[in-house]
Image (cartoon, rainbow, N blue to C red; front, side, top):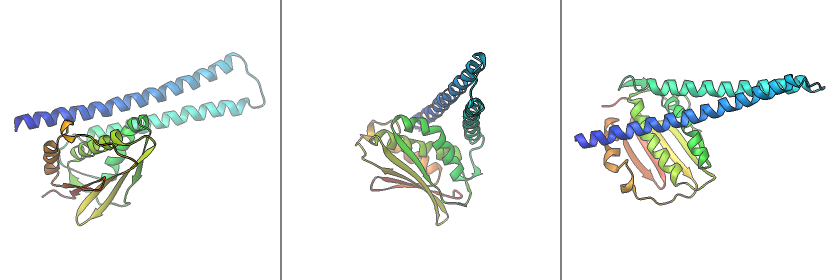
Length: 219
C-alpha cells in the first residue's frame, strides 16, 4: 500500500509540474508579445512617424497589448483557482469550472500536437461535493493520453452532463488514435482504480470514448 501511495504522490507532483510548465510558457509568450508591441510603439515615437493612419496604428498596438494582458490575467485566474482546489480534500465545486481551468492550462500542450480542445458543457449542471483536485488529476491523465495518441489536426471533445445523481464527463476523440501499451505508462490501471475509488466513481469505455461518472456526493 505504501508503494502505491508513493507512486500516486509522484504522479500528482508530475501533474502539478506539467500544469506549471504549461502556465509559465504561455505567460512568457504573452509577455514577449507585449514587449514587442511596446518596443514597436517606442520606435514609432522616436522616429517621429507621421501619417494619416498614425492614430489607428497606435490604437492597434494598444489593443494588442490589452489583449495579451487580458489573456495573462485569465491564466493567472485559472492557476489561482487550480491551486486553491488543493486546500481541502472535499469541497463543493462546479465541474465545468474545474474542467475549464484544466483545458486552459493544457491548451499549449494540445497546440503543440495540433490538437483542438473543444468544450461541450451542460449548462446549469449541479454542483458536486467531492475532491476537485483529484478529479482534475484523473481527467488530466485521460486528456494527456488522448492528446499524445491522436493524429495531428484531430479534435478532442470534453463533454459534461448530469445523470442519476452523478456528473458524467465524456472525453471524445475525433481522429485516428495510435495504440499504446497501457502497462508501460506510469498511470497504471491499478493506480487509476485507486483514484476512481477515492472519488467513489467509475470509468467505462465506449469505443474510443472515455466516460467518467462521479456522484454529486460520495457515499
